[in-house]
Structure formats: C-alpha cells, structure tokens
Length: 319
Image (tube, rainbow, N blue to C red; front, side, top):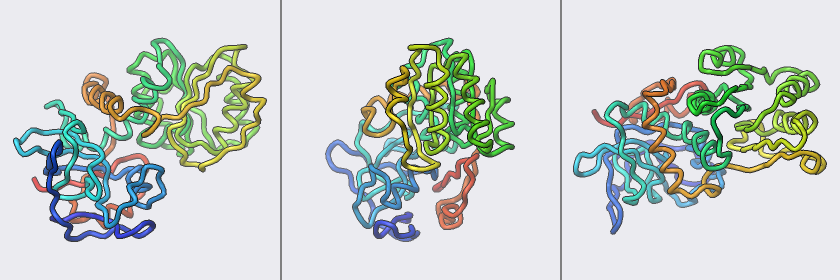
C-alpha cells in the first residue's frame, strides 16, 4: 500500500510503499478515507512527543476517518504501530473506533476531532466547566483555540476571553463567540494589566495552548487580581510558545489557582473517545466552524510543508 512514513527519529517523512496491515485478535483493518495533519502528528513523527511510538519505520498520522470491512464509516485513533493514519489502510483495536453521524462529512470529521477534543476533554474531564462560568482561552487564534472558544460558548459559559498573536484571526474570534479579545503582542506590563482587569472581575477556567511567557504573565496576574480564595482551574493543553516557564512558588501559595494538564496520560483514553463521540454530535447543533484544505495523500510532500495554524490540512485517500 502507499503511505507516508518515517525511517527514524528526527528524519523527514517519505511517501512510498509500506507493507499492508494484518489484523490480530481484537483488531480491525480500516480503509482510510481522510486524515488530518496536526501539531500532535508532527511532534510524534519527529519523535519529540512524550507519546511517540519510537518504532521504525513507522507510518505517521494518529487518527482519521475510514471504512471497516463491512463498510461502516468510523473515526479511528492511535493505530497499532508501525501503522498510522497517513496510508491507504491501517489497523486499530476494536474499541478505538467511533461511529460518525451522517450529517458530518469525512474531511470535517477528520479535521475537527483532534483540535476539538483538546478543549472538549479539558472542559469536561479536567476543568469540569459549569454553565455560567467565565473561560479564558490563551492562544485562541489557532485551529484548536478557535474551537475552544466556540465549544465554551456552546457549553453556556457566561463570558469567553480569548488571547492570540495573529491580529486578523484575533478579530475573527468575536464572531465565533469571544466577548473579550487580548493581543499577546503587547508589552509585558500592559499585558499583565489587561489580564489583571479580567481576573479582578473573576475567571473560573483557563485553557492554555501556548505556555511560555504569556502563561507566566497570566498566572501572576491571576494570583494578584482574582477575588480571594476564588479558584482558577488552569488547564495546560499545549506549549506552542515553549516547553517551560518560571513560576514563583508564592503564586500558588497566595492564590487558589489549580494547575493541571490535559492530554494522553492525564485522561483515560476511553474518556477521550467519549469526548470525541459527543463532539461529533454537537458540530451541527452548535454550528462549530473549522477551516479545512483537502489534499490527496499522493501529494503528501507538498501538504507536509504547509504551515497555517488557522486551518487543518486533511489528506484524502481514494474516492
């Protein structure tokens, strides 16, 4: 079969022939129809992600949409290494397939599952977001952050605050449900003042996609401004601005900030599957919007070098 795969850690993916998968007991072979390129896919392919398979050669791609042998259409996740989603066929355990509503096309389902799941899981499994609470999405101009704003609104958050570096995308967030937008390009003192203003009014949940200096500034402002003993559930989902921050211990001792992460390992995989199942079923009712670009798997090389955080590139296979 044709597939995109890596021969070793740190090597660029190649497109070519790869052995066909054979299902073992409890597994099923899937004919892939669509699979999206995401930051998770890139970091696992490079071997830098904490959940990278470290088995080579290995087909890249962590999830996608396809057909079972009986023709049933499903979303699948985490194929058994060395197989992945960027191929004509893959193999997964039976419990790692999720039915897709008829109203959702293959490309949209493949594109929205990973970025939508990132906040859906963070809201439901980690922050336990409640109706009427205030949400701040740090790093909201990327695909995942834009969906986080929309999902928070669908969950009846009373106020959604969005931050980001892309001025044009930041302006678009108001149309997606953001009540307040804060540019991250401001100088640190001005940014802390903007954060301070919002936390003084009360913020319940922070979903952070960037980490780095803006997360430091945000946490300091929260500790200084949040009403006394009012908890802030801070959920780290990504680290686009860097893998580490400097956090004075006094910030945690002087506030009710609750720091936690959300991802593979912090949430049982079964619960991640449940979140994706429910995500698919609110796409239409909630009017969730995600920009996509479809590219045939055979044109993998051109798709892989594209960098546009505001849309998902989806590789399509067959008809």
